[in-house]
Image 1: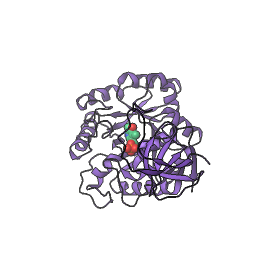
Image 2 (image 1 turned 180 degrees about the horizontal axis):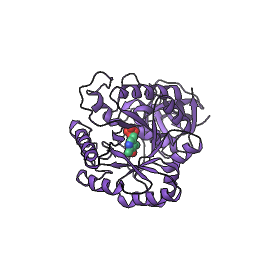
Image 3 (image 1 turned 135 degrees about the vertical axis):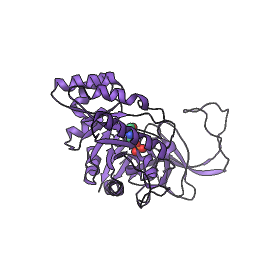
Image 4 (image 1 turned 60 degrees about the vertical axis):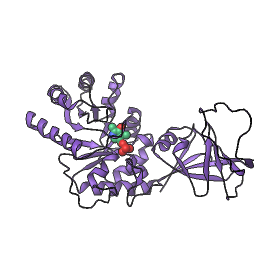
Length: 361
Ligand SMILES: *Cc1c(COP(=O)(O)O)cnc(C)c1O
């Protein structure tokens, strides 16, 4: 059945359930992040059954899709809203993450028009330099936000390790907690949400590199929510991509079909210039090899993020092909090769219309 992603829902459920339980010990709830699944309602329901309390996505299209499919969890837009999408956002997202007062005011007006209340989480810049209000400016913005009609200030959040790989640690997490405390005190409120970050925060919560959910000496402080995508879907810690203990790393498998299998020299011949994707890495001469051509390529996935099953080596890729060394494996035309995926490969496979998505129990 041509190029496909096989998605094991039981393994996703297992991963989500373990993470929800381990974080509950520390008073931390889980927002399941669906953007790498293209907002799959089936996977969102698996998240929910596993104890995830909220869903988050960076794309309003994905939130709309889940809502239309009757996914009942509260929905959070985790990328700062576009002014051009405000009407859709107040319609389908219960909460959005924000950093610009102009956008929050537009959300207030749009919510007012449809008689709803929209929740606001203010994102705080803690050093990774993607989205976020500078910490010293947060109080001023809260003062404006809490006065706006049809807006409910829900709390604050931060996001690290995405642009520059700045690591969540005691120092930056304590800064977020201290900010939550000072804002609560200043305005006489108790904010609902202090969202510490994404999958890369797990190591901070559980101390050490194994994320075993043992007793932790961490000062969790006010952090009461994490937003998890990669850790649930791929079972890995994004800081070093090591497997998280007891989680599956193979809930997703990408499968490609063999369309050519020939003995060929490993070294190209003729004058050399650039290839389809720039200058290819130098090729080591291995003499004649069993070269496999698969009908899957850069239009289907990030081929650099694939790990083939044992005994195969990826030699190269172009828009529509992956080239493998089959080594000792004997293959027939029409056979299939299975790959594990990293986050980037998963994202591209899920969003490629050429890759069938096959959900399995
Ligand atoms: C993508 C994203 C997440 C989830 O990140 P993972 O590393 O997949 O857990 C969390 N928060 C924001 C703002 C994101 O954009």
